[in-house]
Length: 225
Image (cartoon, rainbow, N blue to C red; front, top):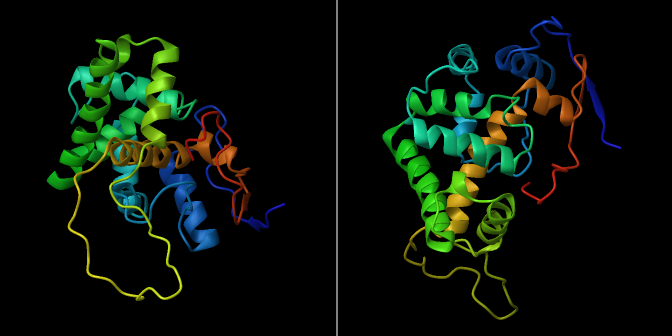
């Protein structure tokens, strides 16, 4: 069993739950090392957001259920809602899509383009495979598509070093992103938004005054962690 860390109880109001800023501030104050989200790369754009209490609070306040998206259009937003729920069940209750939309609205153009390219790649793959946009696919088709995307090869793979090989080698030219890269980018946004919510943090062991120092990893079906 993972070690536990005692944290100060933060904002326990059972009628409205804990906001992302309250929970993250409690974690940073108690652990002092940020939030280790399963499967989320250190360089992912959402990491910088989650380390900024001001951005978290502003995005969380605007991302109320039913609010009009600020960055995404209506179709993109509805696609994200569906994708998020399929990748991380419970994302709708955690208002993942609204939170991500608000973060993207204040992010760099590079991060915005990357997200839209990732979302467009999944949408394009749905149309290519099944002749319908993502939202119109059956559950089985959505799972099949995401399984293929999550198991495809990334553009850059770690090469195994063998005895006798030089330790350093000339850098390879960058390769265009694959569907796996696009899936990983989307998954990072969704997982970061989900596990920074009260729902996601409680899944990882947070109880209001106690938190696990390390996590066993996400246990959702599909192995998206």
